[in-house]
Image (cartoon, rainbow, N blue to C red; front, side, top):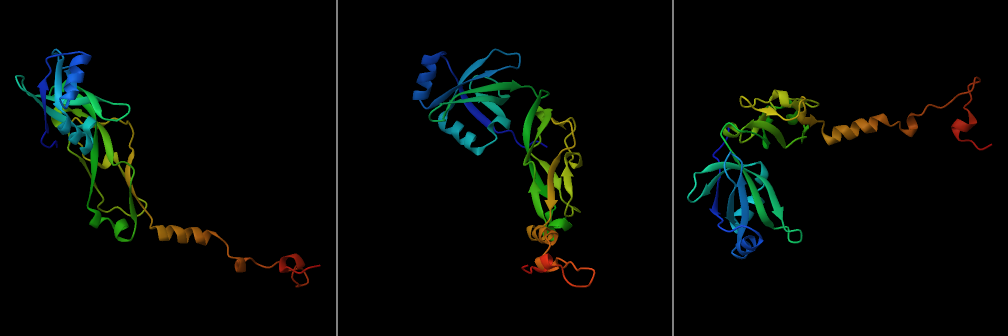
Length: 225
């Protein structure tokens, strides 16, 4: 199930327009807006260094945050857009959407693999190949899983793990309407190379062609005429 929702701290922005946004950036703040939830939009400023730290941590657009703004009730939000400077690639504006606990959202959830020691295929030298390191799920804001867990117990070389084998929280479903593969166990590279070699016929394995009288065909024997 979902882990603790991380906080993101912002300040209400009193001015609007390009002038206020430029001033915010000079003050090492990033302007943003919070909308939705049947409330009026709220202009905010976010500390630049804290925002960049969260962006570098990854999955910023797929994380549910607890937004804290002085003078306002805490609210759960999800980032819908980060505008960046086209030259420096630094954040210049952020859009957040308010969510109620029963709001439904689509988020990419990371995949964790367990029971590798109980997979015969891996113990015999097979190689685990992750087809999807994260899966997009449709879930309620109050029940966002921190991760989904894939067990490899009993899996052998050639086996695949499908989304249908994963236990998801109640009310949560994949956004893709088919039983897609998350991971599979492939043969060891050495075994695959050996199989390829066996498919090739060695020169000394080519049978010679004999004439009806028992003598070798001159062309097959490589004799010059």
